[in-house]
Amino acid sequence: MTWSVDTQLALTAVQAVQAIQAGHLKATDYVATLLARAQALSNLNALTELDVEGALADARRIDAMTPEARALLPLAGLPVVIKDNISTRQLCTTAGTPALAGFKAADDAPSAKRLFDAGAIMLGKANMHELALGITSTNLSPHAGPVRNPYDPGLIPGGSSGGTAAAIAARIVPAGLGSDTGGSTRIPAALTGIAGFRPSVGDGGAARRYHDPQAVVPISHTRDTVGPMARTVADIALLDSVVTGDATLPDVSLATLRIGLPAPLWDGLERALETTARAALARLEAAGVTFVEVDMADLLTLDERTGGPVALHEAGDDVRDWLVANHAPVQTVAALAARIASPDVRRAYDAILDGGWRDAYHEAITVWRPKLQQHYAETFANHRLDALLFPTTMLAAVPLDEVNGSSSVSIDGGPPLHEMNTYLRNTDPASNAGVPGLSLPAGLTSAKLPVGLELDGPLGSDRRLLAIGMAFEQVLGPLPAPVL
Image (cartoon, rainbow, N blue to C red; front, side):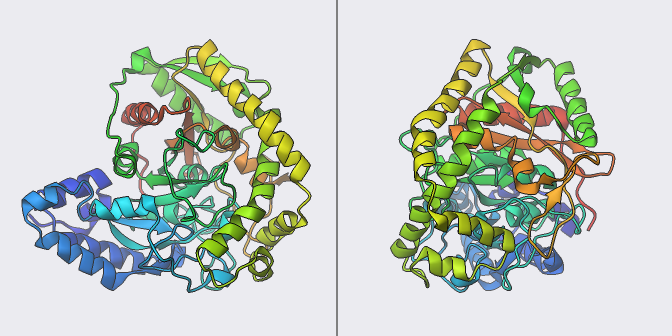
């Protein structure tokens, strides 16, 4: 069988693995096609590093296997990208910041290693918002540059995992890994028309689904997690099963689902985005889903009292510990911060180095975060909900700012709003509560920009949440590919 370039680029992760395992598609041909795609679309700045020789060598090893051996690898020959803050031995891990340029970790992060052990091939490292402290991925470091949205290169792709999202949306790879502290897999997924998953974290113990200690350049041990990103929820479910060893997928009937619509997260939306999101709701309702309005009146207040103090206080200690444990080129947070290239990230590190968050942090961890977690648990229980559903972001992608890395935004001509806080509003609460969240494509606005819908589930309901997402994407369908 002859596989055209267009056919190969359109393959989902599930389809690509099936074709390679069956011997219908050579891994070397597929990898070569995607490497050429990456080089042709280098203007998107989706990748900080491309491993041409390594990826081809890995593909040759897959092709040399017997069919029986390939069948044992659930990701045989699947090209992926890994966000640049996730440790890899083969390629540099710089978190998109000058002080770590050229740094190579001693080992692969556990989540990445499980993908590689299952036959995945690392095509390259994905660009990101510098040090993951932002939602635009407009990285002003000389070795990185701003990531551009494949649907319009003048717009942000979202962040901080914007490079992973852009590479997947642009058909450079079908899937990859990002990380998520307050929305960093889900926001870029929404703005680039793909799916992004934040797995359960809970309080960091047995409920934590992905375990990557000291293997990700951190912000907050309470909030950080690695998460898979792909063009379909089915692809995310495949990667999640490999990382966790949990392949269960419960049967889901749309007619039996009760999905909550949290009022605070449907308020104040951009009109064009809300029109697209409401149209998706109507299609899901017509397919049998029951929607329940829930007020969750305390949600945003509890989130505000939790998020900032936790991230800004923990970052100081967590980044210092990572630098020391990984024998990084700089060993102090101050030395790292001194070379930050993006003004918005420099301001965030000024707040981190200020060190005045201890009292607010103690109250956030002991009072407000437990109340937020209880608010979620009671909402799910009292309304007998399978999940919550709301637009992942308040507005679609906006123009990128190559001077500051981030700027103010306006919703339908309203007053200027803080860009990061505006995009984080809907994703941040679930991050602070530690519950799983999944963004999936809902449609395009009248301006042909992607819109995402987020499903949040009870703590530990990850595989059921993915099954619900898979059922929803059967109704909503994929978005048209960007024209590049």
